[in-house]
Length: 222
Length: 222
DNA sequence: TAGATTGTTAATCGATTAACAATC
DNA sequence: TAGATTGTTAATCGATTAACAATC
Image 1 (cartoon, chains in turn yellow, brown, purple, green):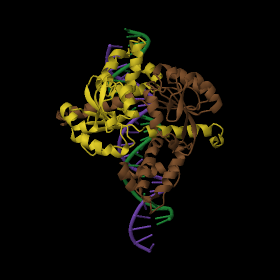
Image 2: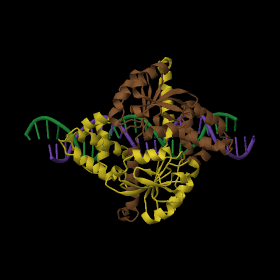
Image 3: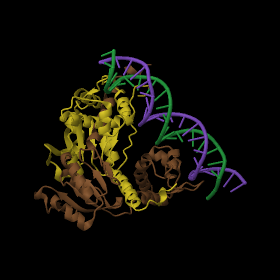
């Protein structure tokens, strides 16, 4: 933890994974776990786990370890799984529809309450119980419902303009799937960019390394 | 760069973003760019950019900067955009279909050649020019076509078993969208886990911080 | 040549790991 | 009490930033 009490991004990014693994342990019926056991499952060091968890306070018990249920609940609370942030999704193409139906927003502190698309042919179509509205209706919808989180599944050309509009309508958080680095110059707005293309390219790099290293070890001699 | 010539993961993960931004610059018709100008656009330090690029050799020119076209090409070559790794996708549900149609595999060194699903009702349906095959046909298809990369859009329960099967069939790389940490205990296999749920949870955490900090600054006094 | 900007080394910063005293 | 395992401090490691000599 830094001096001002804020938690480093490296720690935060590990929390959802802890939460997931603890859920698994719970399903297996485990009551307690030590940092060492958990470290083996998660392929981390026990030291890192203890260090991470102690950013938020002493959830463990010396000589015993951690209560699985309790620890999971605490991490969930930190992440905000019990929140109900009103969420809208813009862009109901292939990806937008898949996100809307595939992601369990509720268990992650978000309530998907509206879906919008610019294509009038989609208006009225229902995706996961939610009717698609036309993007023209975003403004009135936001004024009536005050959503906080926006999921952007729109082409890169429109992203910045839509984001600007949504910020003006009071949206605070953006889950951005567009092929564009949403750089928000506003205060108190958060953005999570998901670059699937970048992710695939990283895999291509790694694939290239392993498939060409397989047969060529000539460089390995000192 | 480390002693053995391998590049750190932190550097690699930045390469696709460089590649993207250079593409934008190219579109804008820019011929040259200095590390300082690029750093302002990308919100990095100029130092980091020079450090990163020099892992791979001197692409720049003192007193001038970098040729946009040349630098983009070099990074593309490093990432492997010119490769043609044969790729199959398993699981043609909402997400699988969206990935198959939404991602441009070709520009990222991958060739999507087959789509599979366990649901016989989907067999024969065409997604982005590719017919869905039944998962029973994976083995014969792999023996005939030798794919290298597998995209997994399947439920978590099946993931490890399918991955094991695919490793035995010679697959080398996994782009894993299932809600499961694919931990590969085999040598020379690479995995890129995409945890959309974790990504949303990270955003929920951040949303929680900003929306509750907005009105409460009481802790800020030393 | 003078100005600009790289390539590269050195300094700093932060994150991870190790160690151990505290304590259940 | 003895054994186990945490919470926490100190040591290490790696990544980022700063500085500057090399050079276009």
